[in-house]
Image (spheres, rainbow, N blue to C red):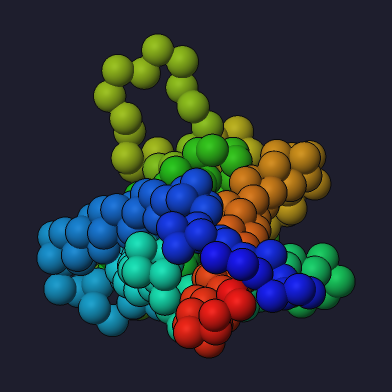
Amino acid sequence: MARRPGAPAGYGEEFTFVSPLVKYLLFFFNMLFWVISMVMVAVGVYARLMKHAAALAYLAVDPAILLIVVGVLMFLLTFCGCIGSLRENICLLQTFSLCLTIVFLLQLAAGVLGFVFSDKARGKVSEIINNAIVHYRDDLDLQNLIDFGQKKFSCCGGISYRDWSQNMYFNCSEDNPSRERCSVPYSCCLPTPNQAVINTMCGQGMQALDYLEASNVIYTNGCIDKLVNWIHSNLFLLGGVALGLAIPQLVGILLSQILVNQIKDQIKLQLYNQQHRADPWY
């Protein structure tokens, strides 16, 4: 059919601006993290159900609750990405892109604020560690985490080994009936070569000793300074981890925006074809 002079070049009925590569790449990208989110929720629920009831009083640092919350949020976010890309739904894709952008900016802001207000961040870390020491015997997961940290960083307590007096079982007060009175956890003890059985009572009475005497048996330096030194000496590693978290988010944002623009172009093309279908010069 003849085309009206000056009319824009048209496209065939089968032409589409939406790239299958972008569409299905975004779909499988979200599907991968969707599956990961379900695994996180399942692990978190299982861990929560297996925990002792005494741990209910200390949910703030509960790894199981953290896994469940992060898993649910990731599930909802990737659900929008999966369905939005598969159904070419602009609303879901823009919701996915906006939420992912907000998450990325919050992570960036947290990193910048942590660097700028490092003293306040150190104080917050100290508060968390001291709070964890207080609840050491209340939560088995927390207990294992603290023991792992003290052995990993060769430290004991927050600032020093005497911080363990904040715990009701290790407190040095005269009216403390605990057999662990004035002691420290076994994870504070210096490693013994070729030790077949772990001596869980090796920290008995260590808080009553002075620094030099105690240093022959246990780690006397606190974990806060050791943690800060580890961070300073592993900045490239931490930067790599941060970059590894940021790249998938940026890829998701980029792919979703490309697909949204392609869908909008396709809608414009369909409207244009509908308006000019009855035109004898089209």
